[in-house]
Image (cartoon, rainbow, N blue to C red):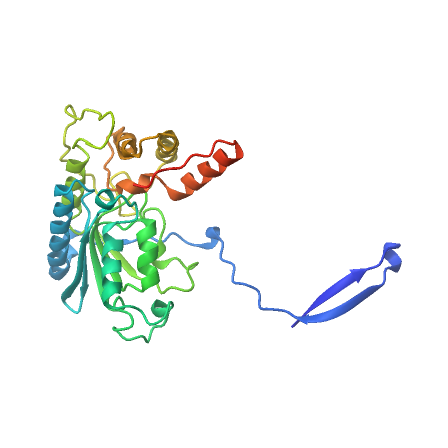
Length: 319
């Protein structure tokens, strides 16, 4: 196939002369529009159908979540299992390391890659790589809360085989609650993975509820939570499996946007999580979300751009 490059001389359109030169035409890029992608949800496995081995490993993940709770971190824990053996255990460390990317999943991924460094940057895209080259190839992740979009994308890029989670992440879930990173056809360079949820879902939600009742000692003006009541009732999973409130609503998204913007100009970054927790809990919703994800990276970038345009560039301190 060739590409015709035409130059049109000035003059009447009926008498234009055109000179054509031929150049190789590259194949058209594959264009997948978001509208053409069907909903991609994680599967919900009811308790009566859950495998005992999966439950065993999820209990181990809950132990890591308890450890995170004791360390005043969002109580999310993960276990990476390959061939019946644990190859990594991790929990959230975002507050400890003051780094919003230090979710339990990424902590474990970094540890595994330190033990099995890949031989090439594209190690996960080759199906015939050995376990030494790709330790995630036959690995299952057990995590107490559905991985966020950031973590789900990372899991797919490293070539994870399967993800089993407890509670859904109805605001930032990357395995079907918000975005289906696990099998999105637009991610043509990374193999999809299986994602199933509902394993010890209520236990994971209760741990999160308890955490969000605790005082935030890092906030400059802590909001008293003495009058808040720990809810013990659970709604059944929605059609999309996930949080008891179902998919994110327009009102919820707008509330998060307002909260994020109000925090953006704050000089004390330690107040961020407290303000955003309050916005999440305003309507008594279950907070099965990663705390640090409330400051959505895209929104922050947008606001930074607007500040620069307005001549009032501020820097958001990393947490």
